Amino acid sequence: MSARIAEGAVRRPAAAVRMSPGVARLLIIAGLIIFWEVSVRLWGDPLFLAPPSQVVVSLYEFIWNPQVLNALRTTLYELVVAFALAVAIGLPLGLILGLQRFAYGSFYPIVLLLYATPQATILPLVILAFGIGTESKIAFGFTHSIFPIVVNVVAGVQGLKPSLIVAARSMGANRRQILTNVVIPHMIPSFFTGMRIGMTGDLLGVLLAELYVSQAGVGHYTRLFTESFEPQRLFALIACLAAIAVFLNESCRRAERRMSRWHD
Amino acid sequence: MSGGNPWLYRGVQVLFVAALLGLWYYVSANGIVSPILLPSMTASFAEFGHLLSTGSYWPDLDVTLYEFVCAFLLAASAGCSLGYIVSRSGFSIRVFDPLFAGLYSIPAILLFPLYVLFFGLGAGSKIAIGTTIAFFPIVLNTIAGFAYVEKAYITAARSMGASELQMFWSVMLPAAFPVVLTGLRIGFIVAFLSILGSETIASLAGLGHRIVTYAESMDPAKMFAYIFFAIIIAFLLNGGVSTLEKRVRRWQA
Image (cartoon, rainbow over all chains, first blue to last red; front, side):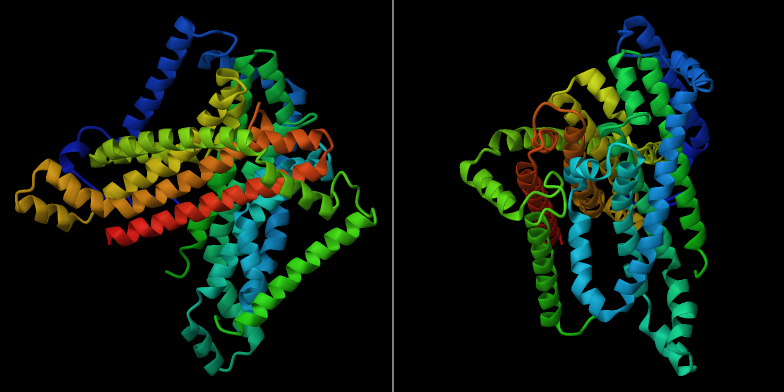
């Protein structure tokens, strides 16, 4: 995926002395928000655009709106359950596929094929099968997040250096000991990578299904606010969802960074 | 871990697919699953054959591909040029790279209701969402590609008196190219997926729209035919872009 730039990859001292990058970033964000506020107030159509000040007011009003809060809580619940299921099933599945030569040779290509399939095409089918409630969102989030988890666990198990296994065996470890003391600790970093990518998929799956059809979830409210031309509330709801997404993504990223450090 | 008998594995895969098809045939022929969920296999294949032979997929494919090409070209030109400009100084990299990476962690599909509000139900909102989603991997990889160019190359070229233009064409671009290419491939794939997804949510035409229409009119055999078709198109695009990428890499090396 996208490469991150290491701190100070390119450093030109002349530019660095003026202002710290964090301050410059905040200034840019503040400038954009001011530009948004001013331009919307001057030229924006209030049916389609809302200035940030009104969005903040709507955000504040949401605190006393039990229906919107409930919709957000439902979405969080769907995200968490789908992700938990994907981890609970994906991890053992990945271990079996990675460790069993027969399972790997026969079924791993099928898993890769399914991973490459665009799942948006089966969204209507998932809704038909699981209804328009929370179950369909959980199912769609689950199918989006399980594949990266399986694929990364398999890669983690397969990336193990053979010399480590030979060493453990020559020291008299049995199969079970090799599994718990060598294989599993070594696949932890790539398992966490899989969970991070799986969380991105989970968010995509659940939000797609919510936006497609929803009774009382956030999808229902995005549609309602769009159709009733209340852009300030639509922006505020999207901001809430973005905050949930950033929180979940960031938790996974932190966990990944922490877990990938242990054997360096 | 490699090894084992490849023929055995192919055999198991063929058996597995045959068992799935057999199960589908059996289940739908005996009415074990509602025909709305799982149409009969023969009817689905007949519809798929009909679809291919009559070319009735063309108007929808045309719309989807048009949206996709527009979105990818917009994202690629914006992402590469902005990424290059940002990568010009270490300071702007440290300002903008975390900004783009942070925005990237927000699922852009959330913006779709806004885009429908701004650009309507037609192609505009699909192009906008595809562009937004493809932009981030492209810009982040462009920045990374140009920022990571080996210092020694730059010093060597400069000490040999290379002009800015020579520097760009002969040193920076070839060094950054592989990473930029990865970004373009990721952008290519996510643009197509997001356009399919957004057509499913709200649209007037396109492959995703057709699948939803048949799902809602309870015409599952036709829906399955279009699902097969969309998946095949996705695989063709995937395969095409991977082959192209490999060829470019080989030519460049």
